[in-house]
Length: 85
Image 1: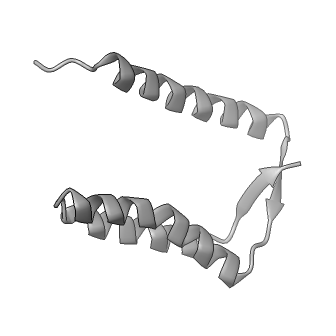
Image 2 (image 1 turned 30 degrees about the vertical axis):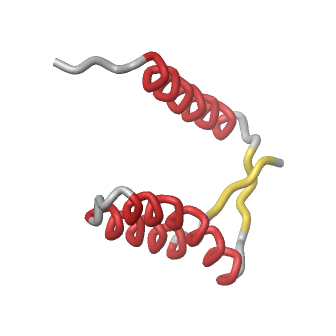
Image 3 (image 1 turned 30 degrees about the horizontal axis):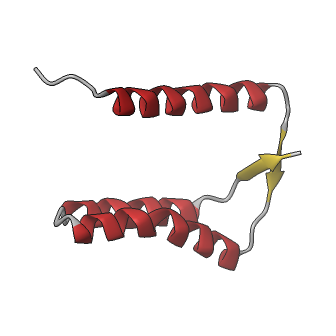
């Protein structure tokens, strides 16, 4: 059985902590809804999908290209975005 290295464990803990903090801030009303234009949504989608697609190409894990495109499309189609007040 393979165990997590300390770096992997630290990254996992940081991700979970960030998600918990985001949920708490959302419940306390620290976020407001934002309407982005289609160009802004497109730039968000590209910035989210590009690192995953580049990683897939450079590491020859080509199945991740479809995953990156799907994440980018989901970000572009999303209508409700939130930001801190």
